[in-house]
Structures are given as structure tokens and as C-alpha cells.
Amino acid sequence: MRLPEILWTVPLSVRLQSGTNRIFASVYDALDFLEHEWPIRHGQDYERAIMTCRGALNQSVPPAVAREAFIGACLEAGMAASAVASHYHARSGPHGNKPLA
Image 1 (spheres, rainbow, N blue to C red):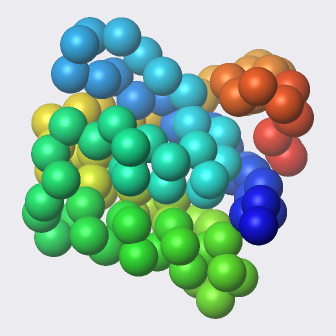
Image 2 (image 1 turned 180 degrees about the horizontal axis):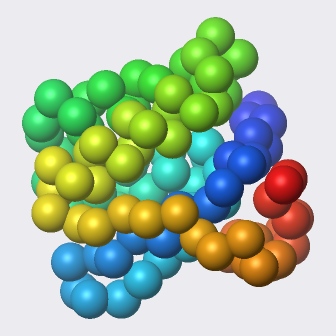
Image 3 (image 1 turned 120 degrees about the vertical axis):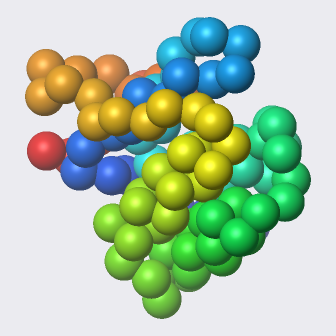
């Protein structure tokens, strides 16, 4: 079953430990990264981000709460996260969806 695409109002730019920046525009983007590419698979903020992202995809947690939890997990792992400028228009994923303003 495909999970729904829940876009954040303001996408996040995360500076990965490699030094590259990556854009996260949705709850699913964040959860996929947390579950498959996360550099440190432990920590209170990491666990909270996993739970809140899953909750947001199940529509039991507001997407903004999942976004804040993901930011907390990024900070816990030593990765800077910041809002993407309002002129951002294209999503980073393969489907080409645009985030809602």
C-alpha cells in the first residue's frame, strides 16, 4: 500500500554529514530518510521523529509536529536544518509534485 504524500507548507534544507544539502518537502521524504539513510539509528529525537512521521502519514499527528520532530532529529545527529526560501518551486522527489504554500 502506498502511503499518502503529505507535503509540508515550508520544505526543509538539511546539510548532511557529507556536507551536501538535501531538500525534504514531505513527511514521507523525511520518514524514508530516517528509516533507510539515517547516519545514527538511535537517540530520543530520532525515535520521536520516526513515531511522529508515521503518525502524520496515518493522519493522527499534524504534519507540522512531524516536521519539528524531524528537525530535532537532524540537530541530534549534528545536521543543520533550515527552512527553504519561499521561492522554492520544485520538489526534490521523483514525482515532481510541488509543495503547498
